[in-house]
Structures are given as structure tokens and as C-alpha cells.
Length: 384
Image (cartoon, rainbow, N blue to C red; front, side, top):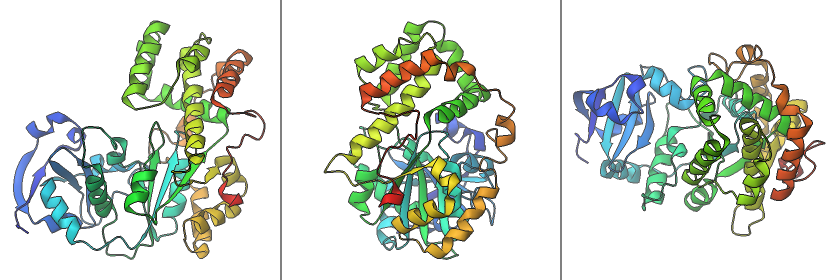
């Protein structure tokens, strides 16, 4: 392997995700490809021809939630160097690496479902490395990449690279919208385990609404889309098509009965993701993914975690350590911290009968029932 395959460069962290980054970084030196195996170097993304890595200061492992509840944000905030590596060099490096011996776990979720807390329960065991919504998985499955399996296998080896400290499992949190990583991951890593976390619809929607009103991007986005309902729904169809998010015109016609587009769309996405999850479970050619309900996790965490860890082939002796996450704010230090969100009032329109009647009609169209009682998707991990 040629020693000068990796180019080490400085970059402003906030520019990392921009195409303009090439005009902003400054070349420093070349490094050996094995340099990216350091604990302080984390994989960031793949382009069509390169792998990008971020280097943090000595001793800083950006996957840890103490740096940020989200992996990408921690990378941007703690980057001191950017490393660009040709794809062929990445493939040579990962081909020389041993197979992943640690366990692999994926948590699939919809926003504001308790997934961050759930992930941090694994981190609290001190034996699991956790990745909260790593950047690569947000763009996985794009049709222009015919070699997706090769790319995914190399990326997984980078995420699951050997560390100084022993690691029992690598745990990933990845949003379930329009696609699932399960078939590809199981094809390459049959030992991987998946679990889907969800919560009751109304508190889920109320929480999402608070976030939308807190984040500037969502506030501007909402203002633009509310100019006219026709514009709103056209934009959402474009977004759903881009995400390969399945929808039907019948569903949209029902949703359009609401005169509050911004409210019904939150329920629509929640229902659609749940329906998509159930469709996957009913396919004979798809590996089964058990579910965990957030309310059950909070009510009886010991029972739920015991079932989850058993499903993931993790030692049940780790459960007491994992429970320590319940005593922390999983979003601490971010604009999504509980203290900040509690200051936001709930929007009464989200629980108005007129809107909930339309939500119920939408759910029926998707084959979902019993929304307002003890709402359960089935395939519960505690029943397996």
C-alpha cells in the first residue's frame, strides 16, 4: 500500500458538509491510510471518488454523547483536520482488515420517538460504541452508486474499526423513512440485529411540533410552505419522491381535508413510517425487526432492556449499567434539551377533534387501527 494515499487538510468545521469546502481547506501533509484507524479519526462520508474523515484532538472520540447527542454535529464541532482518501485506497485498507468480530446493532426510528435515549442506554454499558444518525446513512441507497454493497462494507469496517479499548458491540441509530438498511446490512453482515422504536402518536406529534418551532430552518420552511396549500403539497410530493418515500394519491386526498397542512403532515409521516415498518415485517423475503415502544421502555425499563439485550446477544449483566441513561437528559447541551423544549407551549390544534378524525381516516387507509388506546404495532421484542 502506498504510504501517501491520504491527504490531511485543515478545514473550518462548519464548512465540512458544503460542496464549497474544497475552496476553504488548506493542504497540510500526506499521511498513511492506516492513520484513519486512530480512535480520534472518524469516518464522515463518501463521494463518488473519495472517502472523507474527520480528526479530533487527542483523546476525543466524537461518537460519545458527551460531545453531542448527534454524531455529525460532534464531528463538525470538534474537527481539527480533514482527511481525504481515494476510494481505491479505502477498499485496499478495509480488505486488509479482519472481519468485524463485535456485535452489530441498528436502531431504526422516526423523529422524537425516544431513540436518542434508547441509544445512550447502550453507551452507558461502557462496552458499546454508539453512532447517533451518522451522516453516511442519511444518503444511503442513492441510485447513482451501482457499487453500493462495496461502499457499505467498507464504511461498516471503518465505523467498526478496532479501538484501544475492547468493544462488545457497535450500535447505530438510523431513521426509517422510505428505505431500510436491513436487507443490505444483513446481506453483508448476517449477524447484525435490528430493532424499531416508536411511541404513541399524539405525544410524538406534539414533540415534533416543538422541535419545528425551535429550529430556524423548520420555521422558515413552514412559513414558505404555508403560502398556499397547493404549494405546500407540491413541495412535499417532491420531497417524498426524492426520499423514495411511498405515498398514494388517496392518502394525500384525505390529508388535504385538513385546513392545517403543517399539522396533518406530521401525523401523516408518523403513520406512513409505521405502516412501512409493518409492510416490511409481512414480507417473507425481509429479515424481521422487533419493535420497542417508548412508553413501555419508560414504564418497565428493566424488562424491555432485558428483552432487547437478549435479542442483540448482549450480556444481561449490562442492563443495570444501561439503566443509568434514564437519569440524564439525552439531548443535554443541544437546542433540543428538555429544559428548552419544556418552555414551548403545546399547540392545541394538534389534539383538536377535527384533525384527529382525519388522522384516524388516514390510519385506516394505511391499515393501522386502534390509534388512541394502547397503540401497538406488534412484533414487540418483549414477546419474542
